[in-house]
Image (tube, rainbow, N blue to C red; front, side, top):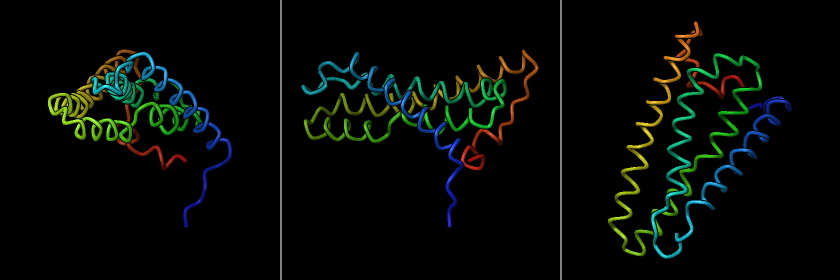
Length: 150
């Protein structure tokens, strides 16, 4: 049986999720003005790519600077996971397929997947370099185990 996290951890996740969701909606509102007419879903792409970059950066550098037990649940489980969104990517992709906007769909899918992998790699490398330059040890194993700290 799964045990719920401590109330303070759940609150940190909830606060991070609120910030991330508001950030994602702001980016979408600014960059998706013509989405209903089959336009390119730039807002979701920008949120997902910048979120991937931030995830890589934070998992290597910032997480090493701030060791408070609530920080990682706040930024990773809350903020980044609510800022980025596979479900919106999928819904927008389906909408493009239904409109038979194949070129836009293929471009969107390739940029989202390939760009996400590139952005998280760039974020991790930059974060690792900055951390090393400041004498901060990067724990590559820890970055993948946020749930274990909950």
